[in-house]
Length: 307
Image (cartoon, rainbow, N blue to C red; front, side, top):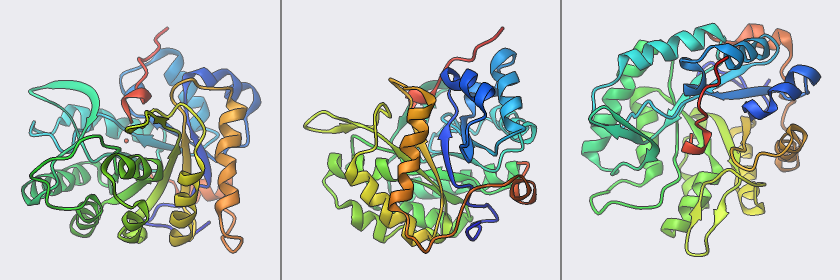
């Protein structure tokens, strides 16, 4: 195992758990290191999805990734949501909980979209205090992901990497570094993605996301519907080497191919890891020693299946 960050282990190479792959996983028990679930898909669901998740959680490490925390919203924090989030984490022995630096709704309405926030001192103070409250409630660090974005605000005065770095420093939260999102935003907003990486506090990066995107010529959209492109892999190489090894997950949420294709895509990450890096394959003993009882892009959100 690589050195733990915030007490969390390097789980190795994982994939997002999607319902279309349930039969394959239950039948074949594939050699994937871990799975990431979309928290909202299981918080209020029973039936087959929850039964299947419980079975998978007995065999693999589970990480929770959410889309509705709305840490940047002006609405009060939803403690009923947080209660369900915390209970699910305990039920599946989730290794950690993550969400996005964004807002998803206002006036009690959820847009089911990851909306950008203005990056300035006022917003920073607002988000900082909400992160502290959430972490106190969950009794563990929250991981925040850098989102892909398509617009900027005239009153933004802080680069995204600085905003996230200061949150880490002042709240002791962790980071979920999405290198595809860095690349997508760099094209959309015309900045250097390697400059972004230069300023990332890698000592607080617990997890990394990889995904494909759609090139619309004038802009990129974070669709998670295809293979990872070479430029994103090269960004991953830099990020991985600077962490010394990090839990890495492939997201594939539309036009989802068979499980073997998704698993083979994340295994490409081995080509971009330095030969000096340690093995990160999780064993059962590693899992029991490091697990904590403890969250997507809107394309991740799948209506719960109930039987």
